[in-house]
Amino acid sequence: MKSENIMMKYRWVWLSVLGGLMVSTGLRAAPLDEFLNANPGFEAWHGEGEVGMDVMNSTVDLFNMRGETDPRNSAIGDYRGAHARGGLALSRRLWVDGGVWSRKVITPYDSGESVTLHGAAQFQVVPSFGVFPSVALRLSAWRDSASEAVKGSPSTVTMGGTSVTTQQIRVEEPRDDQVQLDLINTWNMTNNTTLSMFVSYGKSTVEFDSVDVTGLSVGGLTASGQFLLKPYTLSDGARGISGVCISQCGRVLDFKVPSPNGQDVPEGMNIGYESNYYQAGGMYAWMSPQWRARLGYRFVKWNRDVDDAVTQMGKTVIDVNHFVTGEVGYKPPFPLFEHAGLFLRGQLMANQFVGEIPFTYNAFSAHKFESRYGLVTVGVAGGF
Image (cartoon, rainbow, N blue to C red):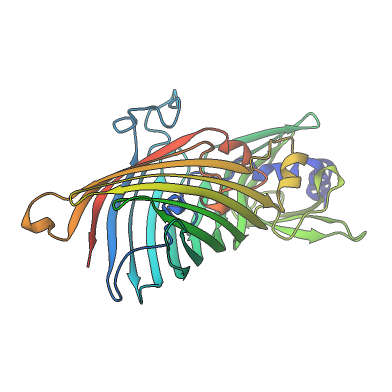
């Protein structure tokens, strides 16, 4: 049909309508790995837990953790969330823990709130002895998910001299799954100070149910309606993209186009992909009957299937991140706090959200991860 030929004319630009997919849906991979410890220090069937509120806004950003605010509105980039996490010693050497997070980053047009579920089991292989550390192995798994991720503002990309604009991009049921193995060493420096170091390896899978775009304009030609996008195998074996109008169709009902630059389109359309990663870091902790202070650092390096596509689209691959997390806890001298205390925690990351919720990173959103970011958490923690 004539409309399909029009779409074929601009075949090299169709994947660009996916540009700018949301990066604003959350934080943390294996949560708070900076504080990994080979010796939790609880007797069997005892443990600890915490509930907290995670926030970032101009009020708490006293040290400019997130850099310059958006000139349109200082609230853009604000973060709000909450979490609950806890652990239990099944024996002096076997520890299990888990947690749940809910969070959202404020943007002017986009939407997407994510939930993280996390669980882990840790076994102390070797207890500490003299100058030798405790050694533990830890296996953890977690999932980040959202009902949808929507970029609700117009996106325009120019390729080959042709301008492509879409009014909205929506990814349904984006999610990621991670499995991670840690080797942890902890030294008892004094009666109330410890030093921990760890190395980790993990694998990650990013998936989604569907992606659709609304309001396409290509080279001045408009295709109204909402189009569901899918990979498509052409007659010559090359992979491309197909679009089928699912709402408010105009003249263009469907189209099939080869991928840009002659590159095959993977099943995940450079939104879903697999990866692995390495990380290393450590923590210094100090405790007294009423106070606790911890300072942790983590470095992470990612190897993603999608990063070749990031390079082909002219974007910079961002595959490393640095995290520094500090915490101060205080146990007030009141009966209500006999087994609990208050804490204040701050986390600073060099490249916002890289390696924290993997489904937010893809070939079209990679450029959104270049800035630093930070969070402040306040909450209550207690032992039992």
